[in-house]
Image (tube, rainbow, N blue to C red; front, side, top):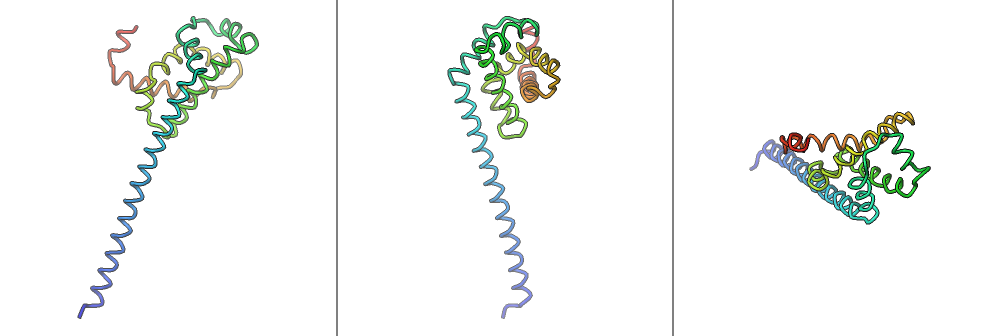
Length: 171
């Protein structure tokens, strides 16, 4: 005859093992869901970055734009004087702000963003960081494009880690 205490001990042990296995399974499912969400966000970023309007804004704002001080740039390209360009520029910086928010909230992997678009992110900030800071100061809006700046800083850390001689060659 099986001892009553032994049956209780075995059943408690099995219950504990079952709960542990369920927790491990749930953790694996959550990890997989996070990876799937990460991939979905990345695909959305990829699609948005291939949009014709975004490509045009990127080409004009990054590759063609000459460097100007804030006041001159605002007079020439601000919404009062050049709404068409300003809207394209705005689309680009708001896009990067959104990517920065997703990175900050761990919704997308910074390494994937780096692999795909580290150059445009850094170039955008190099060209427009002083414009963004000018808007912050002029409008007393310190959080304007804060996640874009955060994204640039995080990407820069990766680039400097992966390519320690980058600044020596480029500057």
